[in-house]
Image 1 (tube, rainbow, N blue to C red):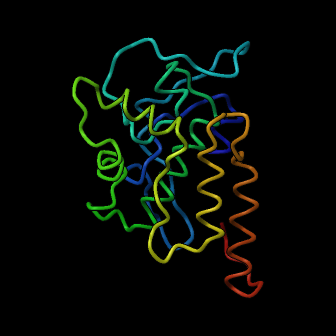
Image 2 (tube, rainbow, N blue to C red):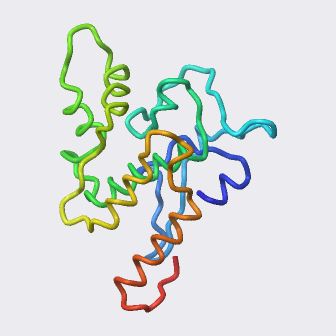
Length: 174
């Protein structure tokens, strides 16, 4: 994902369903159907077409302004990490958890309510058995403002440090 961003691409559909496991140490990102290229003079991509979108994986700026930044993919990575740590259980799916947070309201659409919930600072809960340090990284992916989110290059460093600590300094190929 860091490489995609460095090439000025925004994936827009980073989710567990699009992560392909090759072996114990290698995963690949798939499904580039929503991927867009940012223009040279822009730091974001604005979506103009109306298509079905994975809104429960989207950052607030995507839902409000239809603007996608590399930081928007970071937000989606945090949701994907949440999915992985909940073992993609149906009862823990982001869609299910967010819809429970939204509670039906008269006359308001889910996206409007989702934006309200996110703007109020509510986020997916810490998965059971998730280390505090990992949940803290997820929360850094979900900062309200794109410029305040952790970047992929820093996520890589942080995750490698966590792996080192967990494996007593033995390096795993990441």
